[in-house]
Each structure stands twice: as C-alpha cells, then as structure tokens.
Length: 102
Ligand code: FES
Image (cartoon, rainbow, N blue to C red):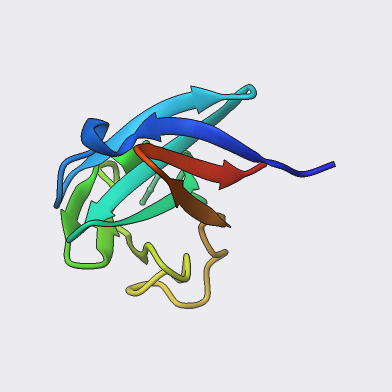
C-alpha cells in the first residue's frame, strides 16, 4: 500500500536547487522552487540521465545529457512534447520533512 515516506529535510534542498536521493530502492530528484518542493523520478525518460543533476530554471529542469527540458510540476517534456513524461510524485511537507507518496 502506498504511503508517504520521508525523502529529505526541507533544509537539504535549497531554493533553485535539485538533489538526488535513494529511497525504497528508487532514485528520486527533489527540487525546491521558491520553497515549494517537487519530486520526480531521477531517471530521464529519454536515455536515463540524472534529472536531479540538471539545470533548474523556474519550474523547468534541463537534463544534463541531451538538454531535454521537463516541467517539474507536470512531468511534461517541454521541448520534445511527443516523448514520455517524467514521473512526478505526490509531495507533502510535514514539519521539517519532505515526504513522497511511494
Ligand atoms: S537522457 Fe535526458 S535528454 Fe537524453
């Protein structure tokens, strides 16, 4: 059964930054956009680049491998719309913890 699992502390991901964590054998990319946290599967749907190590600009993450861009709220690929979406997870902040429905 899916449940909310702690993936990081709020202070671990600074505004405008991304962070890669491993939780429950999944690699996740956590992003902080002006205090709002978003979590995606870290693996780029194109060829598996690490989205958490990409460049974050506003709500768009650019994959470091081939520069595909994803909206981190929806998972939609912005510059290659016909491609598969990045997987987005439901996020909840509780106290100082960032939690994700896994
Ligand atoms: S692996 Fe991400 S754009 Fe190619």
